[in-house]
Length: 81
Image (cartoon, rainbow, N blue to C red; front, top):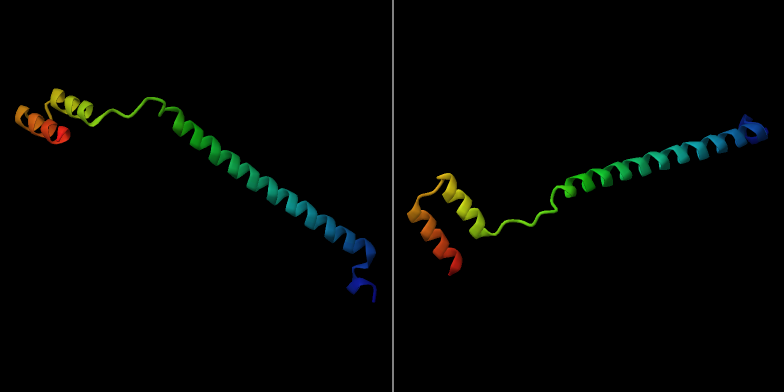
């Protein structure tokens, strides 16, 4: 029996199909990695500004009326301690 019924041409085609499958699989993996990296870059693009300090956040909360003057002064004292 020649190559379990495949013959020499059959083995060559099977090997070629395997190589083609692996190339497509590698291409898909590269595409997914590229897409994930692009997504992360776009997420980081908006974070160019520095984070506000705790005191700045506290000032904004006081200005919006979320906390009273007493709460503001108490929290500000806690931050400076």
